[in-house]
Image (cartoon, rainbow, N blue to C red):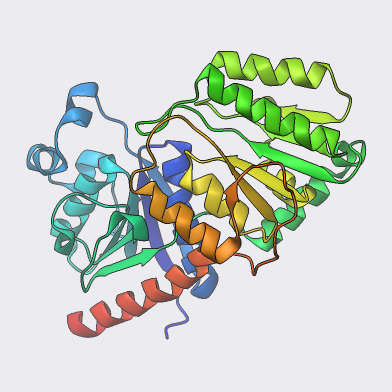
Length: 326
């Protein structure tokens, strides 16, 4: 193994959930082999974004078209539809650049050196690795560090604590007023059982739900509601809570919560589970994660650490490709 630092380009459209997946894998890979990570956010017009990745590549086939200049990276990791054409452009200009794509690309996966997809997408192939959920940036060191950074705020909230991670509307799930009422009922159950609450909403959370959480916070002294103002205590919430409740629209938040090794529950969302049901079943079998029903005691489990496992496999594919190229 070379001791020289490698260069890594992380390509996304800048959406936090997408970017965290790509950076999560890049950072896990860099913990195994020294690598310099450079994030790149693809910014395009509405018409170009709507075009298929193949058509995008036909219109813009050079790395410079996407703001990629200088020496090509040793490897590039992309996530999200807008990252596909830039990865194609890199591979065309620099065949030695190892390209990895996270998620189901919905086109021939052999156009990448490696595809990393959730198991529930059902992809198979020699250059495909699957995992429970998706890569994330949550590691024990970050949870511990962020928890320490927010010690003053956490100390005023008596233990035990329950964290509520609230997502919002997506292509497959909706946060309706009725569903919000169920979330508030779960929170009140925890309050009645003596828990303080650590609540985090997201950019996808509807305004009526935000206001509902604000009303609950105003009625209780032992609730910390984070709604996007100031430093993000997300990792500190994972570290400072004994139980974690996560809306089931987010594979990222579910797997991040499971990486803590804490007691985790799913909070319902409106919509059909579809392929997500396989993820829910996996998390139930592996981490005892079920829908919240008011019973707070579940068996312990080893923290989920899929991102580190996939990082090992990433380098195995990288080395195999390098051996062929050389």
